[in-house]
Amino acid sequence: MEKYVRIGFVLIGLLIWMSIAAIVSAVFQFVNPNLDLLLLGAQFTISDLIGLVTGVTVATVLWFNERVNQLGLEIGSELRNVTWPTWPETRVSTIVVVITTIVVSIILGLFDALWGAVTGAIYKL
View 1 (cartoon, rainbow, N blue to C red):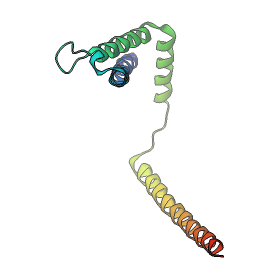
View 2 (view 1 turned 180 degrees about the vertical axis):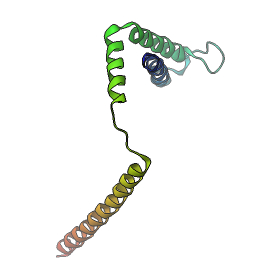
View 3 (view 1 turned 135 degrees about the vertical axis):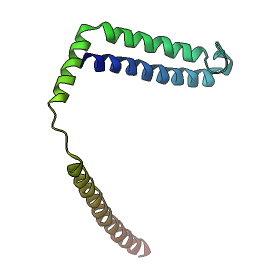
């Protein structure tokens, strides 16, 4: 279970890297596009470096934080106790959701048409 928690920390770091790099790049483009200098070719800029440093820092802090590790292990052990639905149960539940959505959409469409007719008649007066 511990390896999945560690993989999760790495994935969180990668997600933060991509998010922060995109945000910083957008800020640079808004303020001054010349601020986002190329470092290692056209694919790695200062905004990418800032995102990378932030992502690695967050992943490292999570990796070595004992409370976060313990919480991740507890979540993993709880997920093992979950009773996951079988494929037939999932299929039936999906069909029920789709049919319910269609019925509610029809009802709301009828209410909308009725309300439109009523308000249209009032405005014509």
